[in-house]
Image (cartoon, rainbow, N blue to C red; front, top):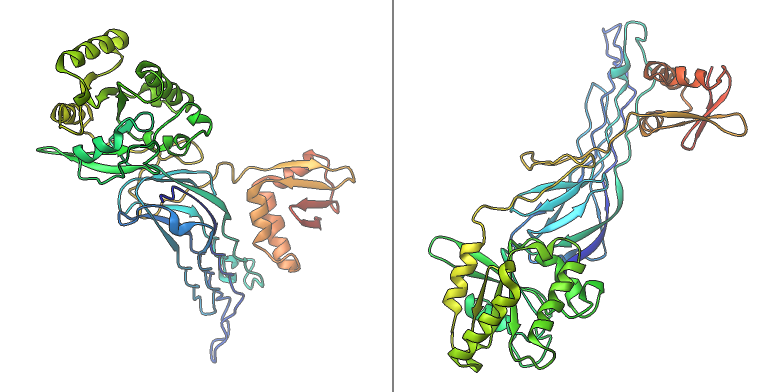
Length: 430
């Protein structure tokens, strides 16, 4: 069974705390602060690996990266936490905790699903000419965490589509070296099967998509589960049986086309070859009449109409040549965007995406007279310090002045001694 979906819980490692330390050595009368920084937490990283075939190994699992080590005295920085690497097959898509759309198609590509927390600064960092012995340090921040859904969309150049029992699996086995299940009853193919057409100077990957039926785009039959695998294809090969056991050929053709349009991802706009299967059941004259009739009905909406027979090999060379000719040779580069909608390439060793608006803030006066400060940047600032440390609170107030938060509070009616709230924190500012 092909597992093309997985929901996993990912958790970036927490950043290590900075340390409060002072140099004390014999014969060194003025040692000063020497607290080192905490190490950053590791991230949860996807790694594209061509040896993986599906997402079955990732079902219902929890992935957590290592936290960063705390800083130490003598200006020693804590070690960075190890990343948690998740191996996924080419074609894997996801949305990171930070909101970035990820699409991995080539071996070796990586992307960060959950960022690790940042390490806190040691007290050495806060030493100035007027604050020569700071007795506070930053705490590390928590890593990102949450549920992430992974989706696998097969990397095929062309997709074989059609109603169940139209002859797609037999056709794939003749055109490529794939060995799909072939039988004389519908739904013999229960998952997508890939095969490779070997041309003189290139290869074309062909996918046999399980049979579509009316209502597939709304979940009927098997087609709804696998329509997504056709989305990457550059073209479609629509297989139609001229003597179906159920329905009329043209009616069946239009049923499949309607489901492609209902899927609403542009599948109905892909270039299409029409393959009239089981041509060995008709005379050459009859097949010529069928081709002429289909050509008159479809006009220029298809790339070509080719009679084929998997039993006798009729038309297979012609179909192979047409598929290779119409599939573009240039590699389709997937679009991977950050949360701000800007495309991101894969040149970096790890892609880290940051949400927009981390530095913004706003002030709101609540019904009991307290002032609430909204904004992720301010919340992170409060998370970094010990609210029981008077020196840390003094530094925090200075930072709020520098950021313009105090000016915004005064414009909202704040007076010294009023209570402010940030997240779960409550304190009075003077």
